Image 1 (cartoon, protein in one colour):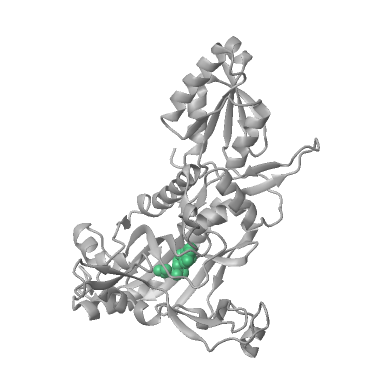
Image 2: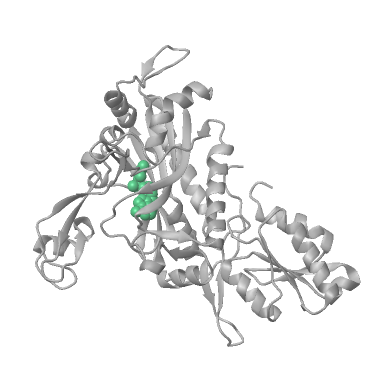
Length: 456
Ligand code: GAP
């Protein structure tokens, strides 16, 4: 199974969640912090806290499992952030990776020309204050850095602007060392850096972020087949993870939107409070990358078919998405403030897929001053902790503890109560429906493993 078979929960069509709600939850509960906050922060750069790192790791691992581990013709690499500077000339980034900027002469705000409403572009007017805009200027997004120690002798290069370039650089090595033949793919997850002109909307547009890429190498005659295959595969992958499937769509790029390397492209888009926005790009890169790297490096990157002896530059299907955008979209998709029928405070719940949830289970002794309950609860907690991320919580009443776990998306809580001492059963409380069942203590581990692991 390479796609998700999730037990569906009945999800209401809840209102779109304001980003601020998720930002506040992320800070309060230790998912995401502003970077260098004690120095005033750096715009467009974030750190991940204890729960954030668990969520992020689950997202990455699940992608890797779906793309690399369970596809026979796909392998993985991990390339460096800094490469030879010629890479970025060959890739077209030095010349073409630019945003067009305008500044308002009156309020001094800066805008990307392509983000301005059409009437403001036509009238050359600031959308904020109506002031006159400057002439458009080109601004390269690549982040420069220097290799070497001797001043005047340092080599200028770049932090990678897109993670996928390592895959083209290692393509020939992988081909020779991994016994793959075309058609085959190479995957990578890694950081990318862009001097975004207008970073913002929390994790949506950052200056340091993480991408996941598949570059799938094919014979030109099979390009359509594989493009369709991966487009469908990736769309279904996202569909399996979100609750609000109607907020997901595949949108073809218009010809004036295409990146400099793409002949055709689709975006997997998701609708949030920010409107329909790109989540992942599926690009028909054709022979652009390997041809350019052959030309700039002088190394022949053409492929010879073992049977037909035909020689050609492989064409490439790319699927390129963002780990951070996945993190943000899944939180926006999962966040809900559910009214309490008893008229008390609404319940905040993160309806994350159990596979992705940062904490899988919380073990709760009904009372912390009863040694018999504590002993059983700690015993279960220690057993579960070895196979999944678990929390032990004995602070405040049981209702509050359930609420704390709901807010971070923990799919199951196990309560050890007085009946446990009599008949060896415990209460299993499920997050979404808040249903409770009783199960024997010695069945808990298996019950949970079956539900919180994608590969069980
Ligand atoms: N190699 C192709 C490429 O880099 P892209 O559309 O620029 O294509 C791919 O980026 C994905 O990376 C996007 O779909 C998005 O999820 C993520 N991404 C791009 N820029 C980002 C940014 N500034 N902050 C966060 N994620 C970003």
